[in-house]
Image (cartoon, rainbow, N blue to C red; front, side, top):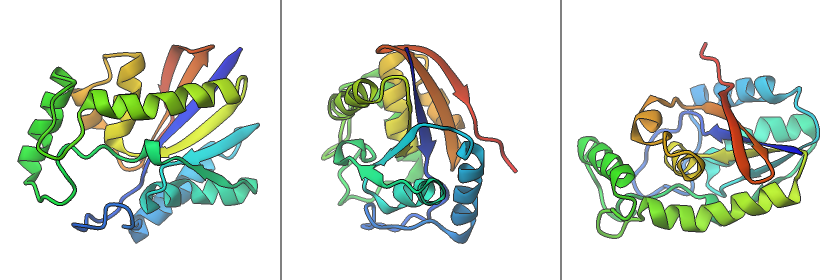
Length: 191
């Protein structure tokens, strides 16, 4: 029996230090969230889940409203901080640390979370979703880093290079037969 997980990376959201949980989508991000809705509107028999962070919820909200569905939030699906959230880090250093975290899954900067740690909190939710929604589709509001980390658990070719190529938003459809990943297809179209 095929079960589908659709990972929706959040749309554009201006970075505001200290506002990781509450920062909202930009005007451009809100427009993109409506396009996410259009791309996924024809999917039937769906449930919608998300990290509780505002930008992830806002990206799947138009779809939820269109379908008349609630969004179930899971704290375990929050974004992975490569360094503690109370520290500022230059973009170059952040990218270098993320790259290292896919080479060494136990690597993180002080106060951060490694790839292995992020997988250990997020993957049990994914397994539960696969069990609870067999034969159905679950849309997941997420982020680039934790999305890649979850995909990497099932197929290690999804690592730093994949993460670096993703866009905001982005949509990936993961098809499972039981708990085995059988296909990943990108659904997002730019423009």
